Image 1 (tube, rainbow, N blue to C red):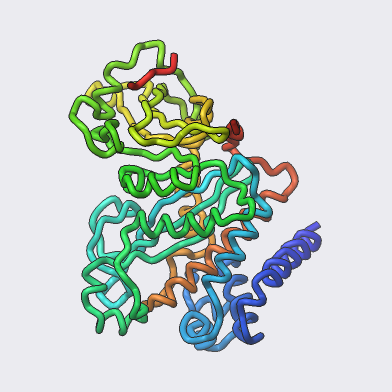
Image 2: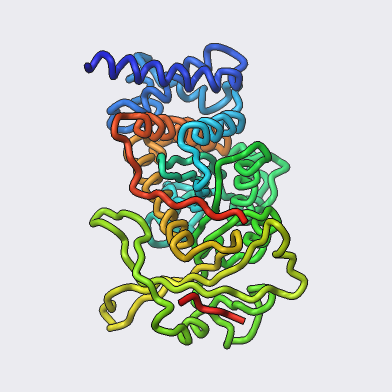
Amino acid sequence: MAEDVLRSWVSGLDDLFARVAGRFPRVEPRRQARAYVTGLLAPVERKNSWQLAEAAGDFAPDRMQRLLGNARWDPRGIRDDLREYVFENLGDDSGVLIVDETGFIKKGTGSAGVQRQYSGTAGRVENCQLGVFLAYASSRGRALIDAELYLPKSWLADRERCTRAGIPGQAEFATKPVLAQAMLDRALEPGGAPVGWVTADEAYGQDRKFRLHLEKRRTGYVVAVPRSQSLGPGIGYGNSGSRADAVTADAPPQAWKKLSAGEGAKGPRLYDWAMATLEPHPGDDLGGPDAVQRWLLVRRSLAPNDKGELELAFYLCFGPAGTTIEQLVRVAGARWAIEECFQAAKNEVGLDQYQVRRYDGWHRHITLAMLAHAYLAVTAAHAPKASAAWSPSPPPRSAVSWHT
């Protein structure tokens, strides 16, 4: 039995590297990348170049460092292959794309993009790099499929520093939502991507241009917004009376429904939820055979906090007309999947255990770590009795009004 499992693992890894083989002009870096990913999957204590080299039987880390440095291969192309691999093996029409960032705490000032900035991973301001990631989640599993390193303005204002860190001379400042838009565009390229929705936290949800970008693509979204979010024309401007929290205060008791946002560590994540249809804005084109609508979705805790208050969370939503509150709640709950991906990728395949400083080295390690993580996710999905905790229903295709 153990030999059968081992053969299956080796065969699966062979198939994965056959898929990406064309991204390596020479056989040597392809073999080294295979050894690197094998080391990431192995029970190696610290998954840096030294220990991965030792696991591969090398006497020194030179080959591993060359792979992350100046060896010729195409990490962006591998991320394209990775996305197709995940869609092919985990995809279904109810799939959700999830945007989020994670921090990589670093010492010194030489690592590309590093500075003192807020890291949600640490929950405080730290000297760190920030990576913006895209994950895919469906009833069949979840995996990271794309990533971009965030470059602060302070870095791009110092071109000599950028050159030392290998940052391309043509690089321009891009906000995190703009980086996310580029990754979403790659994932949503024509060709039948198995995606029904996009979800993200407040950092992206409150960005009006981010939402409009998805609306122009007719891509459904459920994104978190602050309580001060305006619901007026343009959804981003308006008087205080149209704030999300002010509007929610008028919700009738019968609008609230107890629903699960998916399985958590202690069972179903139960909250009270309410959904309100938002009026179209002047000039909107939401009708036709592919009619869409906007909604406000509100989550309320079942029990009061230490201050005796019921905690509220707010989401702006856009999608096919006729979408139900149950569908929106399940998409909102899917956002936790990317946190699980971060935890698994850091704990199991060394996503955060790199020792590279250069811009290209960061993307190379992250790409290979995501490849290893996706391999684990696909292997688990194909294992006997594999099941997923979150399985949203597919969306229907076809002044605030609360649904009661």
